[in-house]
Image (cartoon, rainbow, N blue to C red; front, side, top):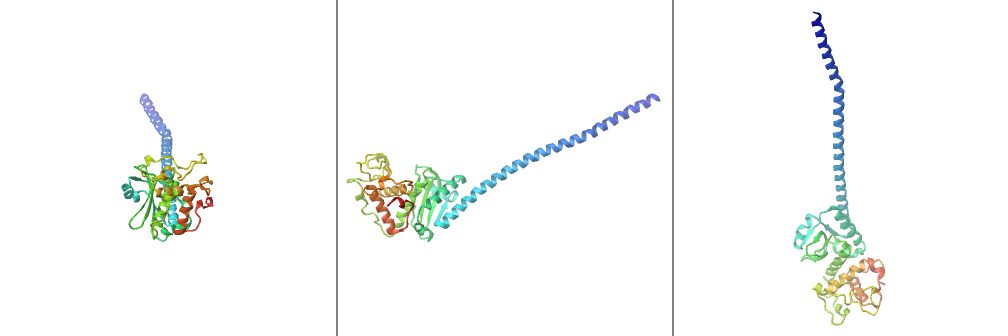
Length: 292
């Protein structure tokens, strides 16, 4: 009997020991679960925050783009388009539509500041909806163009412009083509005496591979040379000649010597702006301060 009681006591002691161990383990298990859950929630929270932050950032840039588009429409009457709304037009011109919100944002800022260089009267054509003007943002042209301007049979004007470091200059070049389209509605022979402003015997050539630097302005060239053109591309057609002059003038940040009164190019400049004054506005353009 004594041996049996002793055995019973031993079993009871072991049972109590196991229970005690379990009781001690429970808080440890609970603590471990809390830590794991906390870590998971923290990671999940961080991941959600990053996604939300990215969404807010993307939404912000899109909102800013839409604000620029609305401002350009309100102030200048010009419609700016990109992405899917440009695809069908771009495909016909060997161009690829622009979708990148950040590139679009940068392009819009450049265009808005470029548009502010014009007197508001220039945009009467678009503000009055007489001749709607569209700026179509594309990523690039497959045929190496930087930009181009077009006019359809409804007298709607479109400027297609790619994402390029020369975006502003390209815009001014094409904007001059738009101005010439508009002015030619009332006067077909705006520049009937233009060829008299070129060297004797000179002919324009649309084969740009044949264009040389002869007669092209060189700031470091001899004072004895006669300059009639600002770039080689100016020698492609008379319309490109005028558009190149206009674009260069709208990009000036100092007075160039080709604007001196005795320069051949200055005579072309005067004809261009006299024609604009007669047909559109007497108000000053950005470059007017250099043309005195």
